[in-house]
Length: 176
Image 1 (cartoon, rainbow, N blue to C red):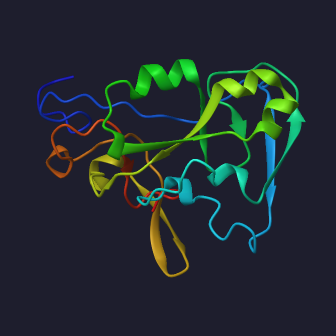
Image 2: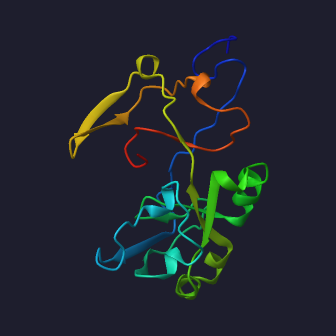
């Protein structure tokens, strides 16, 4: 890419995490009641939820036995990674950028290999999407406008502080 290309900007490189799974992927189903868990996606908010967040109020069950991939299929808006991926991605990140939450013991009872997985909450958000270049489409939800999809990711590097390694793009559906 050429210098100044808005998809990378000022010779900075960014990588996106996308939830993709094989058809044969292991699938974990999570149930909860709103009275017990008022915000099941709190792990992806800037405030810290604490290491016991996934242990209180959630019920877990096997949805499909299959191949255990590095990104675990969970029917929630959580990123649940293998320790291998956590070691790679987060070895250079600042603690303020993310929060790790271990899966409860009941999940390891479903499959012992799941003891090597953790949910990751991304804590920083920046309004850095170059909407014009990205070809963003929008949706309205509760009187708020969210980016629903983009043709290609284009960021405004001037909106991303130096030294930041991992973050949400503010305004996109699922991450505020």
